[in-house]
Image: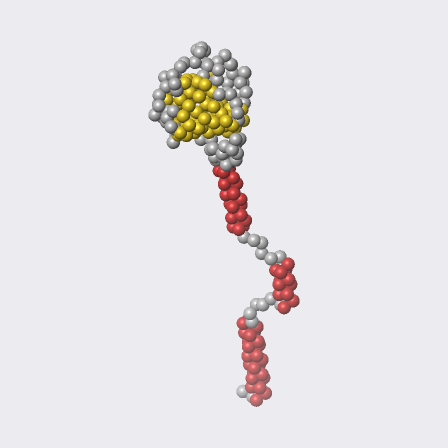
Length: 224
């Protein structure tokens, strides 16, 4: 091969080698965001921080629901810590009782018995008077003392009255009580100073019935 031709071949090989090296270097360069674009991305992130987790919001809603539930539960409690009149803060333990009208006149007479002091709730009410109408009654009666006399505290209320009957809001009463002679039972209020309830009675180990021809005859059940 002549010297000029050999020189041309060497130059051509050198040029191809340089091109391959440049292409290989260009292919290995990592892909990066230009500095100007990176700055723009950073400013967008700063202006739009991530929103709070939805889980935190759900937890707050659950907390609100729990508080509401606690309120409802508390509204259902029947105990009383307020003065219901005459310094009475007795809890109303009785349930509402429907008044039953009777055509019998007068009311039956009690047979007496041994009265057991304790806490009683109204469980039956029968009207032997000439009044007409419907009503619901609720009462808790506490007798303190011996089997023949002592003091009493009561919480009474009446609702849903029709006809001749009227509602009576919850109120407290205190006074003295006595049983006998001749199956008679006296409730003498000292606050408010009101009429004396004079009835006959029947007492068992668990109940006390006060018979009345002018007011509902009431049967109480001893709860403690």
